Length: 337
Image (cartoon, rainbow, N blue to C red):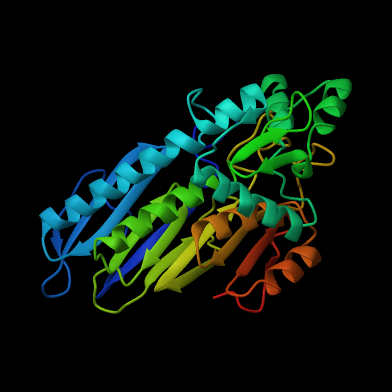
């Protein structure tokens, strides 16, 4: 789920490095490739185009058939959720809400994602606001150069507190309001795919949803951790960090991948109070228990000062972050891997 003029996904800049004995394994091929892992396990990998990006899954199972079955069912779950949460398909529950301003009997999955959006809105002091959709739409239409009056009108419609919920019914308090779940829905969908794999008994897996990554176990089922390189915002190969993980998630947010104008000053990262995009913080990487938590927090931190971002992250158990600024400084929270 993305928006902007760039052809790549806005978070397609986390690259994984699964370490093997004596070398590193790069991103798997765009097909199912069985290969022997630890004794009794087979590696199965598949990639598909979903949510405007490439989603890859790698699992270790006792047989190739089991691996393919698990991956297939995880992808089925992702497709089901995309049919609820995408704002780009007019038939989804989210799109119906945006068009009509209300939705009765909302799917529980939509309510769950919005509940996290409200939590993040509160934690971030309003920096994360899922009702910023009118401003996003305006930036897309105007190619990042909106008329001042139109921008003022769009900003007046941004307020998570005016998205009302009564039971499973949702309603916007004003005509013209709209919601975008771009900052958290992809993570939620990846988390649900992970839950599907776990329910099928898969112990070792990696899900890479365009750079939003969820892992468990090890890349070869032998106890070694997954190694994940955080992409250099300047694309010079100078990775800000390489982290090791055996469980959990990591996601990166940065405005340099998806932008609306030719100068790349107007990006998908939009301050809900001003409509401007951050220029000082170039990228934010977050480690968290789930991809939705990592993805959403990375978006929120991108819109905060470094001091605020580090303070908020340190207050959240199980979370850590790495900020890369326009000056090249790298600022990490105490718990960063």
